[in-house]
Image (cartoon, rainbow, N blue to C red; front, side, top):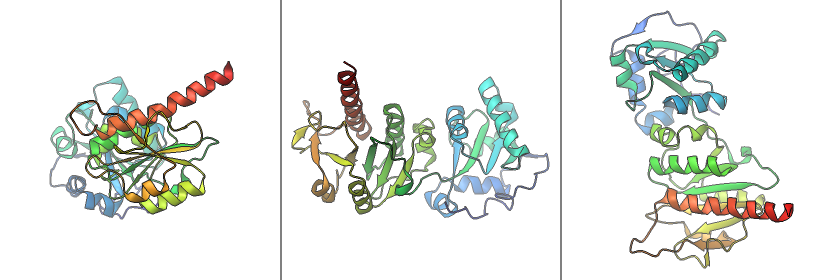
Length: 295
């Protein structure tokens, strides 16, 4: 993983202890730099993003994510859960792994993306991994998302992937920014619990074929019902954007092209809802196969 350049104030990656003072100025260089992270270009340049919210921060820390910086507003730390997270961050700081900074409520309101952040905000490095670093168990199960446009959709898909036991999510073809703070928020921290990779469509197809993973692509024009393909073995469920669907390369590579029946007048399901249907079909078939073996 590339290390972020040190532009969030000179101490952004410096483990030298920060003097125990409270940042109260909105013009502080660190604060101004954090605010700039609202733009993807700034995040990509530094390869860092912001995590806030007790559930999201808890999942990040449990997954072993080491924050570069931790911003704390004591007046807003009001729950046992948030106090426990502060204690965990203080432990990392004592080990020299992160830098703690205290801010006033006004400053915290400036840097937070949401109103219910709980007084704690982390600056963390990007967490995506290369395709060849994704876990490959005996019977792998992946979700591939091409061209997803809305951070909320990607976040919801990550939550479903976590719940369904997906071994990894692969995002490709100009999709929304995986590290958008709204993806972190919508995923409730599942961004840190599910391995995630980014790659070009041709790279993903090649990798899946190399690993002998069956490709089940979804399309309104699919040739079979979504319950028809056998997904009990190694499988990747491939979903495209609501606006453009999947690239033609997927249909050429797919072992099956499945459709979800539409009985109403609306011409498409929300992407996250459609993905949930397909992912849980994999869960259903695998559970049914386990039950047959047990019987």
